Amino acid sequence: MNGALELLEPDWEVPPGVRAAFTLRTGGVSAPPYDSFNCATHVGDEPQAVERNRARLRERLALPREPAWLEQVHGRRVVELGEGDGPTEAADAAVACAAGRVCVVQVADCLPVLLAVRDGSAVGAAHAGWRGLAAGVLESALRALGAAPGEVLAWLGPAIGPAHYEVGAEVRAAFTGSDPAAAAAFTPNARGRWQCDLYALARQRLAALGVARVSGGRWCTYADSARFFSFRRDGRCGRMAALIWRS
Image (tube, rainbow, N blue to C red; front, side, top):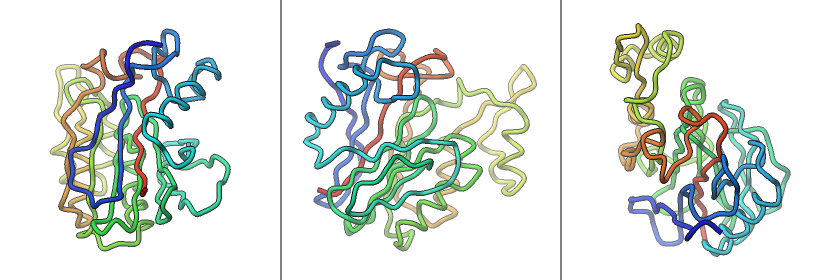
């Protein structure tokens, strides 16, 4: 076991009964390059190590059941979690109104966005890399929550920061083609490409939807190798998990 299982707790004022957490890369059993708290089964890690890590997560958080691990595809599909257990589905967001259903997304540079209705009636999690943001995953998740946007709280978890996220002109065009204001989230660099601010893009999208209470968004997964996995930095690596549920 590689040290203690450490977690980030979102810094937001959610109602009683709503719980959320974000895993770091430490405290698990996975061997390099997945060292050590890898939560993903699709990255090449030993299945037994992933299961031991997930079991430790369930125990550490006293989860009411196994999280609804998604087959993430960088799209905008949302799964609505009900009372029964279902198979892993190809989707990039999940919402739950029923207590005890754990929404989760896995990341290693893409932006995790956790959502909660202020009265505690529904929660959600979205996997928001640039493709998902451009496709409308946040818009889809908000619709699935079924609440007025002004009643929704959002937390932006650890993602790659703009200083390390270089993209091509096609990524910028995917946003500015429909929203010229998105240009503010892209800074030209000396290589003729662009530094992309995922946090700024997500805040713009949420503001346009009417979500005013947004917190988090101050980390860089690439810059902090001690705490975070980063696909852009390392290539082969593990995945972290952002979870939210109603107890």
